[in-house]
Image (tube, rainbow, N blue to C red; front, side):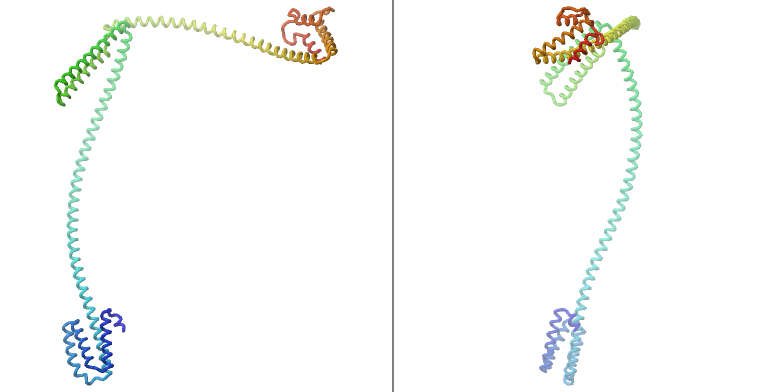
Length: 419
């Protein structure tokens, strides 16, 4: 049963059909049909098996009719089982052979692929060897090229260092020449300033005239070149030459004009002129120094006088400030007194006539006391207003502070008591 289950589906169906036919023949008792079935099965096995199996099948078919009469029913079952096992073995053999054929085909295919792979590997190895050789050749060439480039670079660096040193020397020389030129220019400017103003004006006029002439000549040259270009209609090379010539003429004109402007000429032609001028300038400097010394002395005297005047002004200012403060204090006191008198007047106005008379009498007595103590001790027939006028007259009262007016203090004291 296990072998039957292990068979493929097609073989299982054929095997099941044969088994059903055999069982039917055994039950019905038709040995001839059984033999025919066996023959058919044997023919199928012969067609699937090789030449050796066909020969063995024929011998079995020849022996089978001889023994058919002597076998029993038991032996039939054994024979059927043996035939079954034989068929199963034949079927397994056929399957194994087919698998072997497939494996042989696969082996041939794999061997073919292996040979192709070996060829590819050999070709790749050859290519790799060629690549290594080429790479080595290129590395050698690159090394030699690098060495050459390094040598050229070293030579260029050495040349650059040499040129740099030469440039430094030239720069130092140029710097020295520039310093010398600046010194000469300063000397020239100093001599030009020492020259007379009339000569300087004359040189300026000459420079202006020369500039005008140079500008006029340059304009005329440009007009001539333009007319010539218009008549000829020159090519690009001729036009370039004309432009260069005009530029050269304009540069020459500007250089000449700049030279005329920068080099107006020298006034001093003899060193003795400079010595005489220096002596004259020395005398002028000495006279100026003396004048400045006299001016400084006068300035010091003026400063001392100004300082003394400032001190006097400060002292006067302090005295005036004290007097102003005193006047302000007196003004405040008078204002306070006026306010008190105003209050008294308002109080007097608000009182009745009897009270007013009594107050006037009391005030007259106080004024009389103050008059007797300050002006005259004798009895007089003056009125109250006249007594007040005598008290306030400048002949009877002297200017001063509150301590210098005892009558005022006494009157204020009496007024305060009356209040």
